[in-house]
Image (cartoon, rainbow, N blue to C red):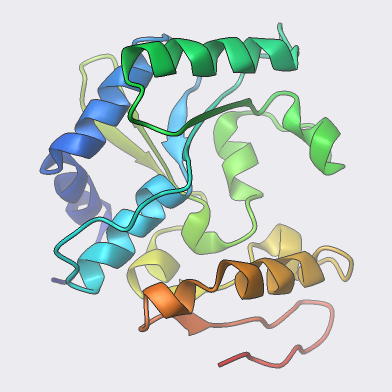
Amino acid sequence: MKLNNKEDILQLVQNDPWMMSVLETASLLHLPDWWVCAGFVRSKIWDTLHGFAERTPLPDVDVVYFDPSNLDEAEEKRLEEQLRSIDPTIPWSVKNEARMHLINNMSPFSSSTDAISNFTETATALGLSLNEAGQVILTAPHGIEDAVNMVLRPTPHFAADKERHPIFVERIARKNWQQTWSQLQLHTASAVGDFPTLE
């Protein structure tokens, strides 16, 4: 199957009852600027492009939101418990992106999409949500091209910093995604110097 644009991805999600259930459950919390992001979206795309009949298991389902008025980590844990009480089969993880810059030693984010744009890889910098009409919406601050072309590339935040770029390289080696999705292409080039491409 070929995925050419955002509409193709949205259709893919709308036709997946499990993904829609996750989004509908997350929406029940009415969180500000909420998204289910990262592997939840990326793995669905890669599974589809590889023709997998079964979903690749996710270590967690990442829900992010943006609330500068409450930066208490305990609130995130409370929200996780609330989601687990609704659907205990999902490995929920909830993070308030209004405080994550403090954890990751970055400048403050302006929104959840701003935070997503600073994820490690472009193919992971994707998020899904539901609008007020219950329709699926997609945020892709670096576009969908790398995700649908199965390219692993650092986001500018990690490509342009000689201290952060090795984090990308180490993460890719640790995740070993190419063992699961054999068609992935790894592009490790850094804006601060050429790094060898790992095959």
